[in-house]
Length: 41
Image (cartoon, rainbow, N blue to C red; front, side, top):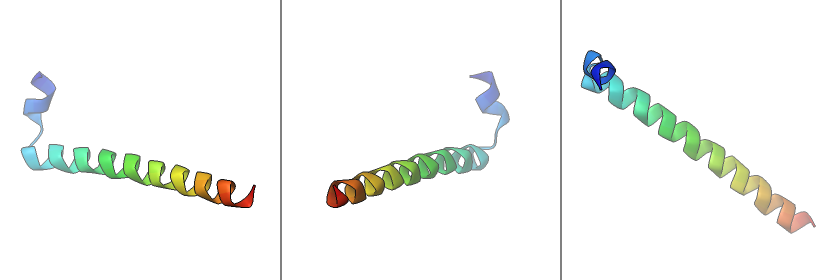
């Protein structure tokens, strides 16, 4: 927990939201690809 204290709360929130958005984008892309595959086959 010591490393978290070194961050500003804003910086930590930025990093956290960036990770979350990246994960959401990846899942959205995978779901879209699966949907396209299901329609074609």
